[in-house]
Image (cartoon, rainbow over all chains, first blue to last red):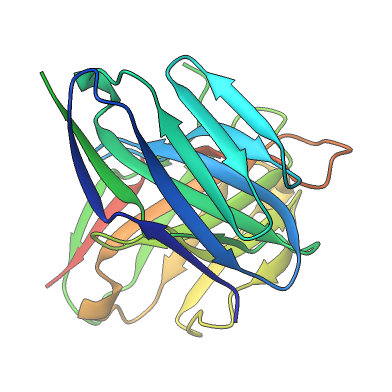
Length: 110
Length: 116
């Protein structure tokens, strides 16, 4: 069964304290891995798409990387406005059934 | 704002009643998705439309759930004979037409359903 897990479940950082979030997946065939940010009471907001192992994408303080079994979302010198739930999702084979992980709740304290 | 819109934003209903939600995707987005999200969990795929055709449906989706996308524009999701377990946030997302097989989705704000 296709499965996506994320760790840690929750993470509290001080402003400026860099860290990484993990997304591990067990799928029959990966077509793409996606990272989203979700603020409370809102729909997810797209951040990155990664297609193959070794690929990296960056946006402001965020950098996403992909290996054959997991992806990392690195947050450099976070600010309080980076506080949100970060979700990863995988697209399996050629279907449109995107499987989401449970998310990591990030809190950045000033 | 030309993002994905959903209506209503909140719905409270009694067990056994039928409810219908509407989603208006971003203009010219031909792909449309419905998801359900419960507290502390990621979105769970329900169904997918390409234009007006419903091409995929979750195996977990009860027969009480039905979705339509007439004319390939807006979409509706109906839940018949609601149960307390249907309480969740229902999210709609759309994606543009593309030659690439894998692509990002743009989500609406969701409809929060509470079944009492």
